[in-house]
Length: 152
Image 1: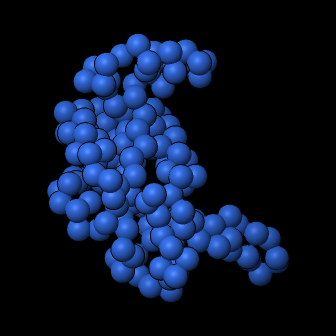
Image 2: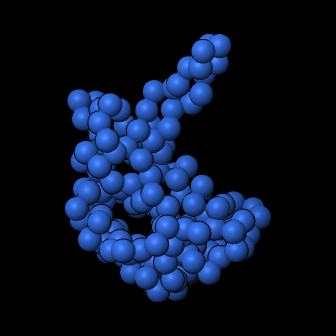
């Protein structure tokens, strides 16, 4: 299980001090709306699965709550489809990484069970990915993503 232990959560520290790093890598060729959708969907899966990613709710001066955001940060990058596939494969091979991905079928269907069926009928090497969200130890994540650019 990848995540932060309660004793590791330090919202007063800079994001670079966190043991784990969270990045979302999106297919650079997607139009803005599809890229945004892919990033948000993989982030939703990640925030549910990885413990300790979200900080406490913020309260404004009027007493309104603003749901917690990632206290250790999240960087959204872009890559070509081949690089995205390579990053996903290498990350998925590491037991100390959490990986959430969005196969292309997710945006090519409008019914979730059709998406499930499409993925089930496709061999792993035949899947194309629109986004990959990964959380892992900072240095290995940095080596894996190299110098990918921020999503523009």
